[in-house]
Length: 118
Image (cartoon, rainbow, N blue to C red; front, side, top):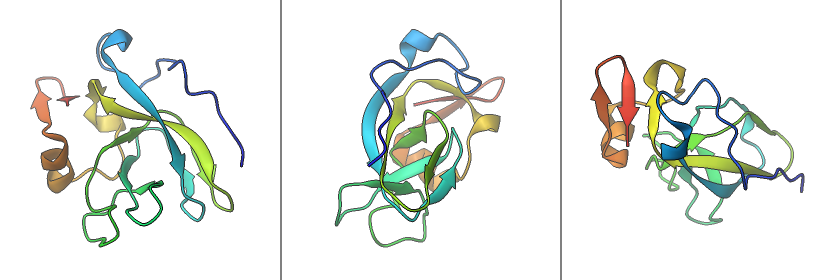
């Protein structure tokens, strides 16, 4: 399985405020998810414990949004290690696949200037 060092998050255009307020954890993105951009909303597939693209209509665990990819990944054919942002202040316009149900899952609040706090 390709690996990526997720021990240190390198701030990017997702971060709206101080990078030291961003919480990133390591996850394994399940093969078959395709190419996913930084900022993609993610859930956890119950059967495998691996991350997959959040989908409110799913029934496999991905219907609960738990965070956002910290960087681009390609999980087209193999599992990939990645960083998952599970807390912080992010630019809402840079997030992909997030809907109102996902915001509720995160307990998120939208601040002035389009900043998502969760």
